[in-house]
Amino acid sequence: MRTTRLCFAATLMLLAMGGGLQPATAAEGAVCSATFVIILDPGFSADPSTGTHRSERPGVLNCDGSVNGSPITGAGTLTDEGPYGTDDPDTCADGTEGTGIDRLTVPTRDGVQEIESRYSYTAGKKSNGGPFRGEFKGTRFTGSFTFRVLEGNCVTKSVTKVELDLKGIIHD
Image (tube, rainbow, N blue to C red; front, side, top):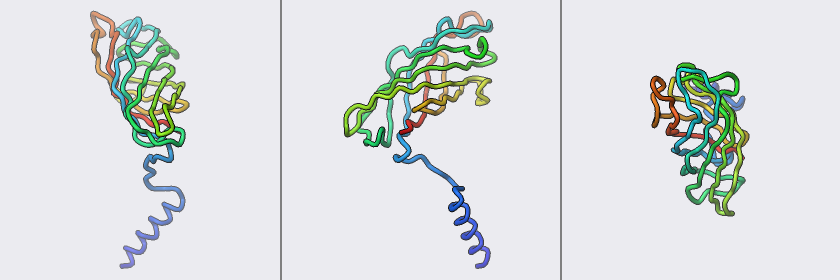
């Protein structure tokens, strides 16, 4: 009985100090996912390069929660563009880093919300998440992604097209 009271007291202390799990809630924004194709120009290979990345077409953005204080009512869209190799030229073996702009449209009870989020990202070895993973941190949209190569192989042909599976949070 004494052990149970001590555990309960310790739990209350942790919660009072801000410890414990802090799940994302609608008050913090919206939890989202999207899958879309990115074009890389000139692309990643064994030779170091810098270039651009852009979405091939708008991806479908599925979110739960609210944006700008308004509940989300359906699927939206996401487009992406920016430079890669911003710190140093990138290769398939070393991974990539860069910056960009995500443009999101999200239908809500109060109408379509348009969000522009400037971000920085790392992927591959530079992200410490594995060769096909990355993270991005933006002014309004932050999260992580995995990718699979659609065109190229890094050996005989540069990787010029990848499909991203993205998960993130739109912050109000």
